[in-house]
Length: 389
Image (cartoon, rainbow, N blue to C red; front, top):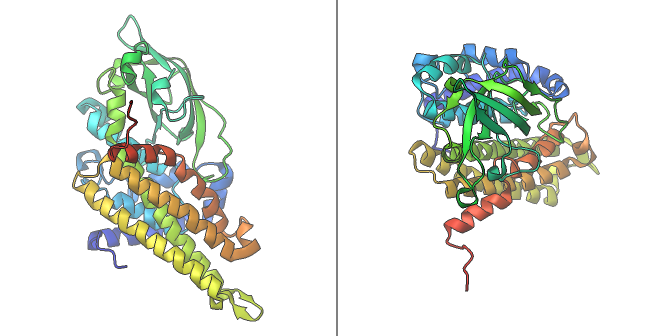
Protein backbone atom coordinates (compact mmCIF):
# COMPACT_ATOMS: atom_id res chain seq x y z
CA UNK A 1 0.00 0.00 0.00
CA UNK A 2 1.18 3.52 -0.76
CA UNK A 3 2.43 5.30 2.32
CA UNK A 4 1.50 8.95 2.84
CA UNK A 5 3.16 9.58 6.20
CA UNK A 6 6.38 10.98 4.70
CA UNK A 7 7.09 13.95 2.47
CA UNK A 8 9.92 14.78 0.01
CA UNK A 9 12.26 15.94 2.80
CA UNK A 10 11.86 12.62 4.60
CA UNK A 11 12.57 10.65 1.43
CA UNK A 12 15.68 12.71 0.69
CA UNK A 13 16.83 12.03 4.23
CA UNK A 14 16.12 8.31 3.69
CA UNK A 15 18.49 8.30 0.73
CA UNK A 16 21.26 9.78 2.88
CA UNK A 17 20.62 7.23 5.63
CA UNK A 18 20.52 4.32 3.20
CA UNK A 19 23.74 5.43 1.55
CA UNK A 20 25.46 5.71 4.92
CA UNK A 21 24.22 2.28 6.01
CA UNK A 22 25.40 0.64 2.79
CA UNK A 23 28.83 2.26 2.80
CA UNK A 24 29.66 2.58 6.49
CA UNK A 25 27.71 -0.11 8.33
CA UNK A 26 27.24 -3.12 6.07
CA UNK A 27 30.96 -3.73 5.32
CA UNK A 28 31.93 -3.80 9.02
CA UNK A 29 28.75 -5.04 10.66
CA UNK A 30 30.04 -8.56 11.34
CA UNK A 31 32.99 -6.94 13.10
CA UNK A 32 30.68 -4.86 15.26
CA UNK A 33 28.62 -7.91 16.18
CA UNK A 34 31.75 -9.78 17.17
CA UNK A 35 32.93 -6.84 19.29
CA UNK A 36 29.50 -6.46 20.91
CA UNK A 37 29.24 -2.76 20.09
CA UNK A 38 29.51 -0.28 17.25
CA UNK A 39 32.66 1.81 17.11
CA UNK A 40 32.12 5.32 18.49
CA UNK A 41 33.62 6.83 15.34
CA UNK A 42 30.50 5.71 13.45
CA UNK A 43 28.30 7.95 15.57
CA UNK A 44 30.70 10.86 15.30
CA UNK A 45 30.63 10.49 11.51
CA UNK A 46 26.81 10.46 11.58
CA UNK A 47 26.93 13.65 13.61
CA UNK A 48 29.10 15.29 10.97
CA UNK A 49 26.57 14.30 8.30
CA UNK A 50 23.58 15.50 10.30
CA UNK A 51 22.07 12.02 10.57
CA UNK A 52 21.51 12.14 14.33
CA UNK A 53 20.21 14.67 16.82
CA UNK A 54 17.34 15.64 14.55
CA UNK A 55 15.09 16.62 17.47
CA UNK A 56 17.79 18.64 19.24
CA UNK A 57 17.41 22.43 18.72
CA UNK A 58 19.72 24.09 16.22
CA UNK A 59 21.27 26.27 18.92
CA UNK A 60 22.86 23.10 20.31
CA UNK A 61 23.96 21.78 16.92
CA UNK A 62 20.92 19.59 16.25
CA UNK A 63 18.46 19.41 13.40
CA UNK A 64 15.79 21.49 15.11
CA UNK A 65 12.97 19.16 14.12
CA UNK A 66 9.82 18.85 16.20
CA UNK A 67 8.80 15.79 14.21
CA UNK A 68 9.81 12.25 15.20
CA UNK A 69 9.48 11.10 11.59
CA UNK A 70 13.13 11.72 10.69
CA UNK A 71 14.15 9.41 13.54
CA UNK A 72 11.75 6.81 12.15
CA UNK A 73 13.22 7.15 8.65
CA UNK A 74 16.72 6.48 10.00
CA UNK A 75 15.47 3.33 11.75
CA UNK A 76 13.68 2.12 8.62
CA UNK A 77 16.66 2.77 6.33
CA UNK A 78 19.10 0.82 8.48
CA UNK A 79 16.66 -2.07 8.92
CA UNK A 80 16.16 -2.20 5.17
CA UNK A 81 19.93 -2.61 4.78
CA UNK A 82 19.82 -5.60 7.11
CA UNK A 83 21.84 -3.89 9.86
CA UNK A 84 21.22 -1.77 12.92
CA UNK A 85 22.73 1.19 14.74
CA UNK A 86 23.36 -0.61 18.00
CA UNK A 87 22.41 1.55 20.95
CA UNK A 88 21.83 4.76 18.98
CA UNK A 89 18.05 4.49 19.14
CA UNK A 90 18.25 4.56 22.94
CA UNK A 91 20.57 7.57 22.77
CA UNK A 92 18.34 9.71 20.57
CA UNK A 93 14.85 8.22 20.71
CA UNK A 94 14.73 7.43 24.43
CA UNK A 95 17.28 9.53 26.35
CA UNK A 96 17.33 12.75 24.31
CA UNK A 97 13.65 13.57 24.99
CA UNK A 98 14.28 13.44 28.75
CA UNK A 99 17.11 15.96 28.43
CA UNK A 100 15.03 18.18 26.18
CA UNK A 101 12.05 18.10 28.52
CA UNK A 102 13.55 18.17 32.00
CA UNK A 103 17.11 19.55 31.84
CA UNK A 104 17.65 23.17 32.78
CA UNK A 105 19.41 25.66 30.50
CA UNK A 106 22.84 25.03 32.03
CA UNK A 107 22.50 21.26 31.68
CA UNK A 108 21.33 21.50 28.10
CA UNK A 109 24.34 23.67 27.28
CA UNK A 110 26.66 21.06 28.82
CA UNK A 111 25.17 17.93 27.30
CA UNK A 112 23.20 18.56 24.12
CA UNK A 113 25.98 19.78 21.76
CA UNK A 114 27.94 16.57 22.23
CA UNK A 115 24.81 14.45 21.98
CA UNK A 116 23.91 16.11 18.68
CA UNK A 117 27.46 15.63 17.37
CA UNK A 118 27.51 11.95 18.25
CA UNK A 119 30.58 12.47 20.42
CA UNK A 120 28.75 12.33 23.78
CA UNK A 121 26.65 9.19 23.94
CA UNK A 122 23.88 8.63 26.47
CA UNK A 123 22.09 5.68 28.06
CA UNK A 124 19.42 5.20 30.70
CA UNK A 125 19.70 2.83 33.67
CA UNK A 126 16.44 1.68 35.24
CA UNK A 127 16.42 -2.13 35.37
CA UNK A 128 18.06 -3.89 38.30
CA UNK A 129 18.77 -7.54 39.08
CA UNK A 130 15.51 -8.93 40.42
CA UNK A 131 13.24 -5.99 39.57
CA UNK A 132 12.39 -6.52 35.89
CA UNK A 133 9.52 -4.27 34.83
CA UNK A 134 8.67 -3.23 38.41
CA UNK A 135 10.39 0.14 38.79
CA UNK A 136 8.88 0.60 42.24
CA UNK A 137 11.27 -2.12 43.44
CA UNK A 138 14.41 -0.11 42.60
CA UNK A 139 17.08 -0.48 45.29
CA UNK A 140 19.84 1.76 43.94
CA UNK A 141 20.05 4.56 46.48
CA UNK A 142 21.28 8.13 46.51
CA UNK A 143 21.92 9.95 49.77
CA UNK A 144 22.50 13.67 50.15
CA UNK A 145 25.92 14.66 51.43
CA UNK A 146 26.90 17.52 53.74
CA UNK A 147 27.80 19.62 50.67
CA UNK A 148 24.34 19.23 49.15
CA UNK A 149 25.55 16.82 46.50
CA UNK A 150 24.66 13.10 46.32
CA UNK A 151 26.36 9.76 46.91
CA UNK A 152 25.06 6.96 44.69
CA UNK A 153 25.23 3.21 45.37
CA UNK A 154 23.72 0.24 43.59
CA UNK A 155 23.66 -1.95 40.47
CA UNK A 156 21.84 -1.86 37.16
CA UNK A 157 21.54 -4.56 34.52
CA UNK A 158 20.51 -4.96 30.86
CA UNK A 159 21.67 -1.40 30.19
CA UNK A 160 21.65 -0.71 26.45
CA UNK A 161 24.50 1.54 25.39
CA UNK A 162 26.15 1.32 28.80
CA UNK A 163 29.59 0.44 27.45
CA UNK A 164 29.79 3.38 25.06
CA UNK A 165 27.93 5.88 27.22
CA UNK A 166 29.45 9.13 28.42
CA UNK A 167 26.23 10.03 30.25
CA UNK A 168 23.91 7.62 32.05
CA UNK A 169 20.52 8.66 33.37
CA UNK A 170 20.31 6.63 36.58
CA UNK A 171 17.03 6.14 38.42
CA UNK A 172 17.68 5.87 42.15
CA UNK A 173 15.70 5.93 45.37
CA UNK A 174 16.14 9.14 47.35
CA UNK A 175 13.56 8.48 50.06
CA UNK A 176 12.37 5.27 51.76
CA UNK A 177 9.84 3.09 49.97
CA UNK A 178 6.28 3.99 50.98
CA UNK A 179 3.62 1.31 50.28
CA UNK A 180 1.03 4.07 50.20
CA UNK A 181 2.96 5.87 47.43
CA UNK A 182 4.76 3.14 45.50
CA UNK A 183 5.73 5.52 42.69
CA UNK A 184 7.25 8.20 44.88
CA UNK A 185 10.77 8.66 46.16
CA UNK A 186 12.65 8.11 42.88
CA UNK A 187 15.00 10.64 41.28
CA UNK A 188 16.99 10.75 38.02
CA UNK A 189 20.72 11.46 38.23
CA UNK A 190 22.95 12.07 35.22
CA UNK A 191 26.13 10.12 35.93
CA UNK A 192 29.19 10.88 33.83
CA UNK A 193 31.43 7.95 32.93
CA UNK A 194 34.49 9.73 34.35
CA UNK A 195 33.04 9.90 37.88
CA UNK A 196 35.00 7.80 40.43
CA UNK A 197 33.09 4.73 41.62
CA UNK A 198 31.24 4.25 38.32
CA UNK A 199 32.02 0.90 36.70
CA UNK A 200 31.01 -0.92 33.54
CA UNK A 201 30.77 -4.71 33.60
CA UNK A 202 31.59 -7.11 30.79
CA UNK A 203 29.22 -7.05 27.82
CA UNK A 204 26.32 -9.45 28.30
CA UNK A 205 26.31 -12.18 25.64
CA UNK A 206 22.92 -12.09 24.01
CA UNK A 207 20.94 -14.27 21.62
CA UNK A 208 20.48 -11.35 19.20
CA UNK A 209 21.07 -7.61 18.73
CA UNK A 210 24.74 -8.44 19.22
CA UNK A 211 26.02 -5.11 17.86
CA UNK A 212 24.16 -3.34 20.66
CA UNK A 213 26.30 -2.98 23.78
CA UNK A 214 24.37 -4.29 26.77
CA UNK A 215 26.08 -4.33 30.15
CA UNK A 216 25.75 -4.25 33.90
CA UNK A 217 26.67 -1.01 35.65
CA UNK A 218 27.92 -0.49 39.17
CA UNK A 219 27.81 2.58 41.43
CA UNK A 220 30.10 2.51 44.45
CA UNK A 221 29.89 5.75 46.40
CA UNK A 222 29.66 7.74 43.18
CA UNK A 223 29.61 11.42 44.06
CA UNK A 224 27.07 13.10 41.84
CA UNK A 225 26.88 16.91 42.02
CA UNK A 226 23.50 18.50 42.65
CA UNK A 227 23.89 20.12 39.24
CA UNK A 228 23.46 16.66 37.68
CA UNK A 229 20.01 15.98 39.10
CA UNK A 230 17.54 15.87 36.21
CA UNK A 231 14.35 17.69 37.04
CA UNK A 232 12.99 17.66 40.58
CA UNK A 233 13.85 15.24 43.35
CA UNK A 234 11.33 12.42 43.81
CA UNK A 235 9.55 12.84 40.48
CA UNK A 236 11.37 10.25 38.37
CA UNK A 237 8.39 7.92 37.99
CA UNK A 238 6.28 10.71 36.53
CA UNK A 239 9.12 11.75 34.23
CA UNK A 240 9.70 8.21 32.97
CA UNK A 241 6.12 7.93 31.79
CA UNK A 242 6.58 11.08 29.68
CA UNK A 243 8.50 9.37 26.87
CA UNK A 244 7.08 5.85 26.98
CA UNK A 245 4.91 6.46 23.92
CA UNK A 246 7.91 7.44 21.76
CA UNK A 247 10.05 4.62 23.16
CA UNK A 248 7.43 2.04 22.26
CA UNK A 249 6.73 3.64 18.91
CA UNK A 250 10.39 3.43 17.90
CA UNK A 251 10.38 -0.28 18.76
CA UNK A 252 7.28 -0.73 16.59
CA UNK A 253 8.88 1.17 13.70
CA UNK A 254 11.93 -1.07 13.82
CA UNK A 255 9.84 -4.23 14.19
CA UNK A 256 7.76 -3.42 11.11
CA UNK A 257 10.79 -2.43 9.03
CA UNK A 258 12.53 -5.66 10.03
CA UNK A 259 9.49 -7.69 9.01
CA UNK A 260 9.47 -5.97 5.62
CA UNK A 261 13.19 -6.72 5.23
CA UNK A 262 12.58 -10.39 6.05
CA UNK A 263 9.87 -10.61 3.39
CA UNK A 264 12.19 -9.11 0.79
CA UNK A 265 14.99 -11.52 1.68
CA UNK A 266 12.68 -14.52 1.60
CA UNK A 267 11.12 -13.46 -1.71
CA UNK A 268 14.55 -13.02 -3.33
CA UNK A 269 15.71 -16.37 -2.00
CA UNK A 270 12.54 -18.11 -3.18
CA UNK A 271 13.02 -16.77 -6.71
CA UNK A 272 16.68 -17.82 -6.86
CA UNK A 273 16.48 -21.22 -5.15
CA UNK A 274 15.14 -24.22 -7.04
CA UNK A 275 13.70 -27.50 -5.80
CA UNK A 276 12.99 -30.38 -8.14
CA UNK A 277 13.81 -28.06 -11.00
CA UNK A 278 11.28 -25.42 -10.00
CA UNK A 279 11.94 -22.09 -8.23
CA UNK A 280 10.61 -22.11 -4.68
CA UNK A 281 8.50 -19.10 -5.57
CA UNK A 282 6.58 -21.34 -7.99
CA UNK A 283 5.22 -23.56 -5.24
CA UNK A 284 1.80 -22.66 -3.92
CA UNK A 285 2.84 -23.05 -0.29
CA UNK A 286 5.71 -20.58 -0.70
CA UNK A 287 3.49 -18.06 -2.43
CA UNK A 288 0.77 -18.38 0.19
CA UNK A 289 3.20 -18.04 3.11
CA UNK A 290 4.81 -14.90 1.67
CA UNK A 291 1.40 -13.47 0.77
CA UNK A 292 0.28 -13.94 4.39
CA UNK A 293 3.46 -12.26 5.59
CA UNK A 294 2.92 -9.33 3.23
CA UNK A 295 -0.66 -8.83 4.45
CA UNK A 296 0.38 -8.90 8.11
CA UNK A 297 3.31 -6.55 7.60
CA UNK A 298 1.13 -4.15 5.64
CA UNK A 299 -1.38 -4.07 8.51
CA UNK A 300 1.42 -3.37 10.99
CA UNK A 301 2.77 -0.64 8.71
CA UNK A 302 -0.62 1.06 8.53
CA UNK A 303 -0.89 1.02 12.31
CA UNK A 304 2.65 2.37 12.74
CA UNK A 305 2.04 5.15 10.22
CA UNK A 306 -1.14 6.18 12.00
CA UNK A 307 0.80 6.21 15.27
CA UNK A 308 3.55 8.37 13.72
CA UNK A 309 0.97 10.95 12.72
CA UNK A 310 -0.66 10.84 16.15
CA UNK A 311 2.68 11.18 17.93
CA UNK A 312 3.71 14.23 15.91
CA UNK A 313 0.34 15.77 16.75
CA UNK A 314 0.88 15.04 20.45
CA UNK A 315 -2.05 12.63 20.48
CA UNK A 316 -0.43 9.20 20.86
CA UNK A 317 -1.72 7.91 24.18
CA UNK A 318 0.17 5.36 26.30
CA UNK A 319 -2.54 2.79 25.57
CA UNK A 320 -2.37 3.33 21.82
CA UNK A 321 1.43 3.16 21.94
CA UNK A 322 1.04 -0.16 23.74
CA UNK A 323 -1.33 -1.36 21.01
CA UNK A 324 1.06 -0.49 18.19
CA UNK A 325 4.07 -2.02 19.96
CA UNK A 326 2.17 -5.20 20.81
CA UNK A 327 0.82 -5.69 17.30
CA UNK A 328 3.98 -4.74 15.39
CA UNK A 329 6.33 -6.88 17.48
CA UNK A 330 4.04 -9.92 17.42
CA UNK A 331 3.75 -9.56 13.64
CA UNK A 332 7.52 -9.27 13.40
CA UNK A 333 7.96 -12.52 15.30
CA UNK A 334 5.54 -14.45 13.11
CA UNK A 335 6.76 -13.00 9.82
CA UNK A 336 10.47 -13.44 10.44
CA UNK A 337 9.90 -17.02 11.58
CA UNK A 338 7.99 -17.87 8.40
CA UNK A 339 10.58 -16.15 6.23
CA UNK A 340 13.36 -18.16 7.86
CA UNK A 341 11.38 -21.34 7.13
CA UNK A 342 11.31 -20.40 3.44
CA UNK A 343 15.12 -20.43 3.51
CA UNK A 344 15.14 -23.98 4.85
CA UNK A 345 18.45 -25.07 6.39
CA UNK A 346 20.23 -22.01 5.04
CA UNK A 347 18.01 -19.82 7.19
CA UNK A 348 19.74 -21.26 10.25
CA UNK A 349 23.20 -20.27 9.02
CA UNK A 350 24.41 -17.00 10.50
CA UNK A 351 25.96 -15.73 7.28
CA UNK A 352 22.44 -15.38 5.91
CA UNK A 353 20.85 -12.10 7.06
CA UNK A 354 17.54 -13.81 7.83
CA UNK A 355 19.23 -15.65 10.73
CA UNK A 356 20.25 -12.33 12.28
CA UNK A 357 16.76 -10.91 11.83
CA UNK A 358 15.33 -13.98 13.54
CA UNK A 359 17.62 -13.69 16.56
CA UNK A 360 17.11 -9.92 16.79
CA UNK A 361 13.33 -10.17 16.60
CA UNK A 362 12.88 -12.07 19.85
CA UNK A 363 13.82 -9.19 22.15
CA UNK A 364 11.24 -6.73 20.81
CA UNK A 365 8.46 -8.54 22.68
CA UNK A 366 10.43 -8.07 25.90
CA UNK A 367 12.21 -4.70 26.05
CA UNK A 368 10.35 -1.44 26.28
CA UNK A 369 7.68 -3.36 28.20
CA UNK A 370 6.83 -7.01 27.57
CA UNK A 371 3.86 -8.05 25.46
CA UNK A 372 2.14 -9.03 28.69
CA UNK A 373 2.62 -5.53 30.10
CA UNK A 374 1.26 -4.07 26.85
CA UNK A 375 -1.85 -6.23 27.17
CA UNK A 376 -2.31 -5.09 30.76
CA UNK A 377 -2.15 -1.43 29.69
CA UNK A 378 -4.60 -2.00 26.85
CA UNK A 379 -7.03 -3.94 29.04
CA UNK A 380 -6.98 -1.16 31.64
CA UNK A 381 -7.71 1.37 28.89
CA UNK A 382 -10.70 -0.79 27.92
CA UNK A 383 -12.02 -0.62 31.47
CA UNK A 384 -11.32 -4.28 32.11
CA UNK A 385 -10.02 -3.83 35.65
CA UNK A 386 -10.72 -6.37 38.34
CA UNK A 387 -13.89 -5.75 40.30
CA UNK A 388 -14.40 -6.74 43.91
CA UNK A 389 -17.72 -8.33 44.76
